[in-house]
Image (cartoon, rainbow, N blue to C red):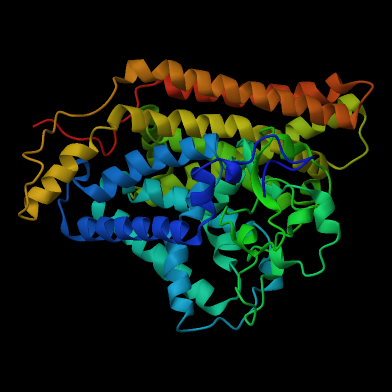
Length: 479
């Protein structure tokens, strides 16, 4: 086929020379997953048997400095390409050659509540076990992840782990709503004449070239946005009309869309997705709070007030207050304010669910500011860690490690952090205004002001956190 057909998207990543062809090749995607699987094995080995010092171990440095920062950067620039390269999926597919899953995921759990609970548990364990400072526990986290993937997807058909369980995946799904790229049909009219629906069903096993359809149950003609999309590109392989691409779109626009979407229904009818968005946003604040000095004063006060010395009840109370009580209270107050000011007839839950999604860009800005801080202030730490690992293995090919290599000074990164938070705030305010205009076209300000106040409160908290000295966790030691 020559040229670009009329009505095609202005930009399609799969039509970019070389890169597009590479992404379309299943072998290239498998090779990327295999490379990350090898990296995961090395990290586990190093975490279990390498240096117990986090700044000198590949497992902690690569996971909590480089991987985390690279993840949010890719989500911002391109979308959910980490899930496309996920090594856990490669292990699952290999296991399925031996054991075929027979069960379907329980209907009562076909929502985001398991993912929300596991995301909270993941953030809790990160703080409780000091994962950034413990190579052994970091390695065990990877091992546990592999075990849960094999158990869930070994028993249940389709991509149940990705869609309902994986906490990192749920975080990626929410973050990718503000990404500029989306897996989408190029020409909607071409889907009207499609009889086989291969994009979701896949080509049958007896076909000349059997292909797997979307295992997350996203039917491309009715798919809207990036929620639940892992960018696996199975739909690209399966479509007989070559009608699926990776196209440019307006970041965050999908959070305003009230249409019924494949696999998810209507966002404004999904309190579980709203809860995920709230945990995503307030979890960003809590994760940053855990790395600044005021957290220790708060924990000490709570320990004295409760009369306990163990960390887990203090940390549990802190998480309950900041990830459950505070978001619920603030969302309820904003919804009540908006309902009273605009004389809305809906219940508080319905108003809060619909408008909660406006917080996502701001939450993503906080995640970016925090994660990129660690990446940019410690991006050179991997060099001496790899040097030391090879030297310990008896192959000092890269020379003696220089543990003074770190990264940019914190003061140089802080303006970027503040800029990312303010950019997220502006996008969230724009979404809040659009949602308010849908509710009250004649008086949008009556709905907008309460949600703008909430956005400003979250942003002010984030700016204060980023102005505090932050722990240089898992960063190389001098000497």
